[in-house]
Length: 218
Image (cartoon, rainbow, N blue to C red; front, top):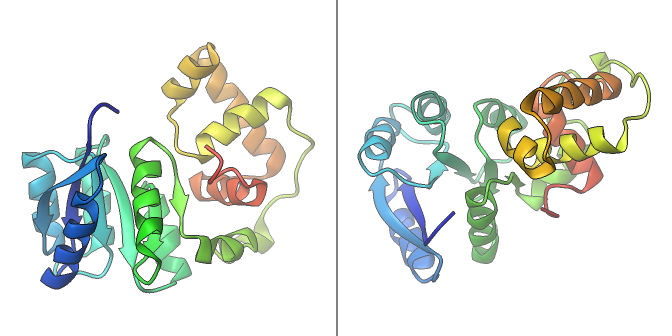
């Protein structure tokens, strides 16, 4: 991504937005281009600006952050969403990832952690607050743990390579370009790896990435 990351802040508390703006604007590689106090305003701002990354408060009045994330990813798939909340809720985290958000940061985390998260998701990766990764790895993120299928067998090196890139947020086309293979081949490797490991969706792939230590080694 060229130049500074363009950030849209979405939080219903003006004082929080002000603090985030001061923090982000102090960085040489990112800048705040707009603010919104509710989900509807986020969607409107994203269309008008548009941003590279939306730092999205999950608990906002009216159309909340989760609903706004779903709408944004449907209308503007290229916009990256980083969820921000003070609540360590497994259900919220699971639904946010299923809505295709790229990360989740707790408001009580230190400021450098938020800046790191913005840089990672802005570069196309996935970021989960370290306070949550142990719970994700333990299976608390996905209530279907007991129903998960047993692995069918070990995955190949190429399948692992593809799945790792999927876990950190790359699209099939990006993976194909990086590995110099066709998109169809990427899809085959991805499907085979997920079948062998008993993974059934994006949340499962991210959880597996946490277990492998992939998310912070991009």
